[in-house]
Each structure stands twice: as C-alpha cells, then as structure tokens.
Amino acid sequence: MVDHRLAESFRTIGEEYDRRRPGFPAATADEIVPVPVRTILDLGAGTGKFTALLTALAERVIAVEPSRAMLDVLRRRLPEVEALDGSAERIPVPDGSVEVVTVAQAFHWFDREAASAEIRRVLTADGVLGLVWNHSDPSCSWDRACTRVAHPALSGGLSGDDVTKELLPGFAPPRFTQVSWRETITRADYVARWLTVSSLLAADDDVRAGMVARVERILDEDPETAGRDAFELPQVTDVYVYRAV
Image 1 (cartoon, rainbow, N blue to C red):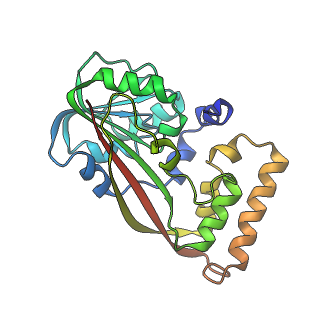
Image 2: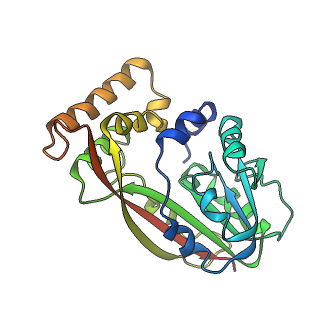
C-alpha cells in the first residue's frame, strides 16, 4: 500500500533533491537499453538523474513527473528532453508510442495495478519496462545502520524486492541485474542527503532532529567513519527488465 503522505513529501523539493541525491551508474541504463531506440519515456523522472543517461540511447526522450519543483530543475538541466507534467497512473502520451519506459527510484510510490496498465498502454507491442533502485551495499555496516534509522521497516534498505516479488500484469517475468559502484562523499553531504528522504521530509521538527542525531552518532562511532570529513560509500543498483506480453 502506497503511503501517499510520504509520496507527497517530494512535491516541494527540487534543487535540494538534485544536489544531494546520488545519480546512477551508466551501466544500469545500458542493461535496459542495450541498443538505441526511437523513444524512451522516463516515468517519475524527478530532477532527471536517470533521464540524463537516456539521452544518448534514443532519438527522443520524454520525462514525466508530477512535481513542478522537480520538473523545473529537469527542464533546466536537460533542455533537449521533453518534460511533461503527469503521473504513472496518468501518462500524457498516446497508446503504443514508446519502445522503452524506465522508472528509477520511484515505482514503489505508484499504484501497482493502475501504473502497470498505463505503462503497458503507452508501450509498443514488444516494449520494455526497466525498474531501477539504488540501495545500501550489504558490506557497508554504517550506511545500512543509517538506512534503518530512515527506513526502520526495511532491514536491508530500499530495493525492488517488495515491488517485484509478484509479476507485473501485462509483462513477462523480469531479468534481474545488480551493478555495484562507489562514490566519495563528505560527511556533511551524506547527512544532508538523508534530509531529502521521504520519512525525514514528512517528519515533524523534533522527530527529524532525532533521526539526524542518530545518523550523526552512527558516523561518530563506526571505525570506518569516525573522525573523517569524507568517506567512500559503496552502493548497489538493482535493475529489473520486463518485456511486454
């Protein structure tokens, strides 16, 4: 069940989300689109972090996003992309008009049945849907501990497991790939990144301050991060590739 209060928390941020959130390794887009196509639609595109990887893989890239704040950033960053106001349950393009739909870090916010039907509607007969999630590397104990602060119900951090354990209507079983990668991040930026997560955005001031304090304490106590201004953050990106049936 989608928590609409948490989903709506993203409506008001754009610049901060774009500045703080990680991007995605190029290999994830290549897994979905190994050969360039005519049209790709990036759904729930946010500020265009994944959309940017698609511009070299299609003649036309369409980004659909319900947040005006995020669309404003995307339009400025990627003027060559056709950026449209819309949602997964209301995609503003004609039937059978795109070869590929991608969803990065957003499918868990969608109404599963309605979104699957709408995505299938806009895809060509042999179209492809790619779902992508960044999440904690199992080897990184301090990042996983911080993730549990922000997402206490998710023991391993946000991934596609809960969303994809059942087949999506209108699609064959997916092909699954994981891409491991690393980024260098300052402590200040790492803490600020958590402030762009839905649970902190939607929290009241006292709860949010308490969550930040717990993240800070983890960084102070873990031997890999204690006393350091910057550190290497390993991450894993899950990629699920579905073909329409």
